[in-house]
Image (cartoon, rainbow, N blue to C red; front, side, top):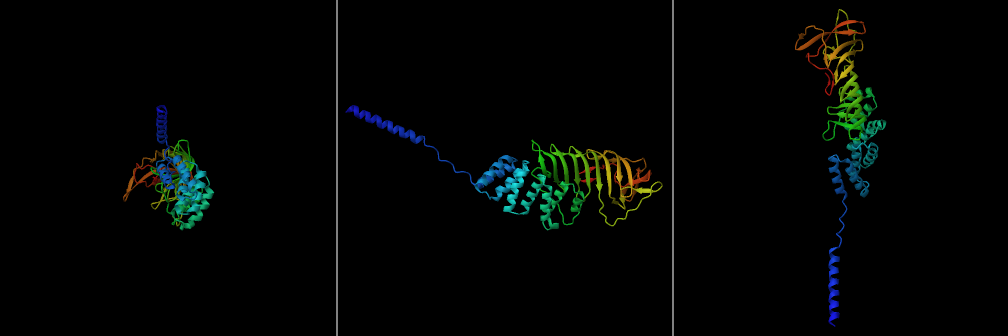
Length: 357
């Protein structure tokens, strides 16, 4: 009897111990999956921090839950463009535009078209939006950039001078320009691209290692433009700076050479339209330059932006300082005595973000 009781007690103890072990090993409850709102909040944090790949994964996860979620779709498109996946950016932003055709989304889609090299699509899309000013400054800027990307210089100038046009610029965080184009493996601007810089300046041309390098065209807001070789983010090599005519009432006249005074570059204080061509070093004229007007062609020498004089003394005319020098008149095959109201002897002439000066 005692032996039976002992066996029973041992069995009960083992059973109770086993229950305790089984209770302690029970699995934790499975956490709830993140909501769309949580995914979007985390995606935006990664996007703002420049971690676009992680942002893309989170935006895609949100779209799996809600396929027509606008914030997730537009965020995905912007993140794709930031990584240089411009084709995927176009598709995502087209979907976003179908959900919300606001000017902001239209601008993002237009930028994606340009970045993906779909310049004609961008021009057609922007033209429908612009309607000669009715579509707002974002639509106008898209149209301008699409024209610049295609090298339509006359159309770009016409757009810049359109009284209804006011450029829109919203560069990325920590940047001074808004870029549309390709990227290299380091995430730097690379290949052919189009950018709008603070101040409304436009560049359409080649980039390398994140800076302008190669052949490119630089437009100023008034319509003047430089086209030529670039290196290290500045004009370096042969280039042409074009000063356009903004005076529709101007009457050109053949100015005398030889014994007469040729007022080179100015007409009553107003800059004459002309093309300055020659070598540029770090953005400045450097070497023999040719200046071509409608009725006259001459040459001069510039050393790192300082146009060289011929030893003649300067004179004062009112509050302005005039320097005299000799320019070679190529049209009349003789030497012309010219003057250039440049204000100060040490003024440097070149292509800078502020214009030709």
